[in-house]
Image 1 (spheres, one colour):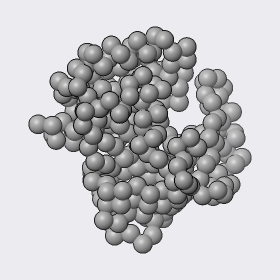
Image 2 (cartoon, one colour):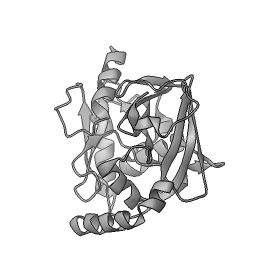
Image 3 (cartoon, rainbow, N blue to C red):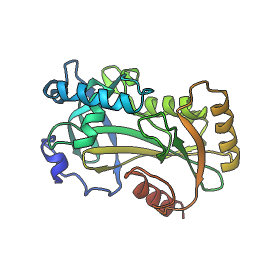
Length: 249
């Protein structure tokens, strides 16, 4: 079991190797109504780092998001516990990722056009991920809690609609869940196949960006190759792109 997850897991069979895509049968992550231990033990450092982050980028907003404390996997089912924390806590954690402190779990909806392109977005310079290219997505937050559990499908639909104007329920085919992990970050993704072409989807997204008074993204892109150097990707994108394009062949 990888060291990046070992201190945060218990009663599990085995986690796959890092950056290896694996099927996920179910996600049951319970939201615990107590402070995250990482947040409690790093309050002063989180506040100090936030001051630095805001000084460099005044547009940042310290909203609430969900950060996992413990996670298990058995027979493809992921279960665990998470806590609501300020976004500033995630910003500090992702800089250092101290072992055994937290896990960042998020959903990634991979939109695929009728002509076989993956539709991605480039984040605006005023965001916490300036210039990064990935499929429209965002961290789980309190809006994504349903009956005490994280609603990944609801989160993915909300983020895509907010950022691109596209509606995931319009997809003609939706895959099951798949996941991969790297240094404490777990990405759970699904493929959403649309009937529209890449050009049509990008045109819709461009119109949405133009009409949004505060857009988070600055453009949409049609990706047709798994080349990891094509754009400024976060680490999770290249292995997902490679898997998606290999699967569609």
